[in-house]
Length: 360
Image (cartoon, rainbow, N blue to C red; front, side, top):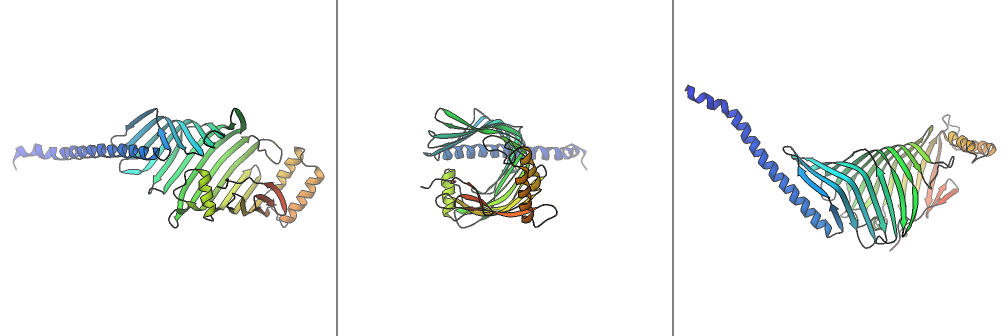
């Protein structure tokens, strides 16, 4: 063997690594440029449809294995002649692996500001302002109308306000220890329709506003809320605004299927399942079966708050005992019915529900 060839052979692995690294570097630059071009095209196309995304300061990076986009002063706005939706964060940072660009991780930095205006922005605006720990969102772009979205907020607190002209109306303050939201298309139906699955959990929720705890009249304090359901026959892609989306959904004879709605407050637990639909006039109808465990605790709480007399409490406990079939754990099972916009508990009408949208 010629000794002069040995040094070159020793350099072959190193040269191979350098060549592969160089090829990957070129590939990363190409992928990054394509991502920036696609993002710019999406912005331009979306602007023609009333959707705009503005960054006070925008940066791109992530070499060698990721594509990263930093957006300080994040402002996303969707508007048309009848409504406006605006979402703002201090910053949003997006990260995707260069070899898996369809899975995007977002870091959301507070404060959060959300505005929903009706009547072209000149009538009523609902404003939500909130602080939270740096939060995460996951978006999987399966195809153009079928993203899978998950969002996790921790230690979120804020306020809700309605603004009408120069007048402001407080809708309350809220704090949630942990809020987890998830949405994805469960199944695609005929063109323009899909069943969309939604799951949400909230831990340690406190709300102080016009809506009060029915037991003692104080702020609402819940240990946990869990929801799992499917919006059936939802228009896909969604319409330009929520009102139009709901009108199309009702016209499609869509319904909200509640697989499970569980609410926990101290020793009391309520579990529900059923369905809700809407008429062409926006009136809700449906049937929800509910099982309540330890309902006696809520009755005792009402007596302590002076909202129920001891005698009325005794009668109520007797009634609920009959409804529970003398179940040893005190579980009361009954149906809540919604008919023509009115909510009934058994034969008793509890309240009237406002239409969820205005007819055309």
